[in-house]
Length: 402
Length: 88
Image (cartoon, rainbow over all chains, first blue to last red; front, side):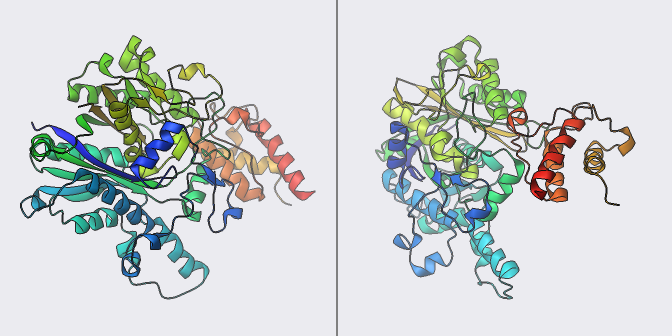
């Protein structure tokens, strides 16, 4: 089996318009959640989100590009650009067919859908822009990344709700490990902060109206975010041969299905995914120093996740650190695992553990070291990243410093 | 004559519980009736649609919501309160 390393990373989030700025925000424990500025916000009962304010696609893309790029595609392309630039990769004729792209998204081109539903249903127009379909399709982001960098190998989109990015990155890991490809651009993107995208979540009554406070006893729900992160996954020898700067090694991945409930999290399914990732990586539990939690800030997720971690790690659960960066950038749905993987890379490479901000009150059901409110310096060799989606689909990645 | 709030709430609860309205006891909890969290959220939605009110209910912590859903009876009382407030 081939070894897989990360040689580039890029992101856009409400913490900043690059991976560097996003990690800086995490290090500072900065709050990227604010009042939403969107059309018809007065008709929403949830009026906060991890929105990227002041973003204008025209600052980065030309008119013809914008006609084809929904915001979720723009976010993915900006992230891919940063990641490719950092990796220094040259996609040669030889590499091109052995390089691909797998991205996660839950909603795809929701801005395009929202705008055009308004046009036909609300404004009563009988005509829509000719590019509505290529803009809104879930694979648009992956396709444009592949076109931009001439990646001609396996490329597709994964949609498993809040685990989309982790499933995508796990599949990319498998591609390289099995020898099918040498390079994969992978991660995820989401831009659900439109009227319909928020209204739908309101209906479920699991959203907070004031803050995302994972693991805190007074938590009262999740907060949506938007953005993307894209990583360059590369076969180790390939990276070494070209003298690439290696950020971290991807060493394990596992996915499970709860096969139980469409929205309620399940401790056993989560625990099996974590155990599976450790087994796949050949790790013993005590080697794990940091867990980037799914940590949505809902009552059910956070206590179930803590119980699953206790179940898997036993006494070591009291020694490891686990934080939820959703407290800062919100829940990016299909893009969330990708942005959160930055926290794992930061822990492994910089020795900085991102905090869980907004933490106010101890919950006995979440009595782990959740790195409350302030980032911490600590040496960590192995980190894992959890994602547990609606629909009971779980995906956990394991990374090691190199 | 229009149906009472009580009858309408019972009808909504009965539909979620897949029971006949005559089987819904006023002192029953939603657990007794076999209604899970999703069923509860759907019932709250049906109440909002039926009575044109906003129900202050957060599924994260139903006990913390200002909407008492301990039993069918308390929910009826809460809905009556909301309807009265909406009419005043």
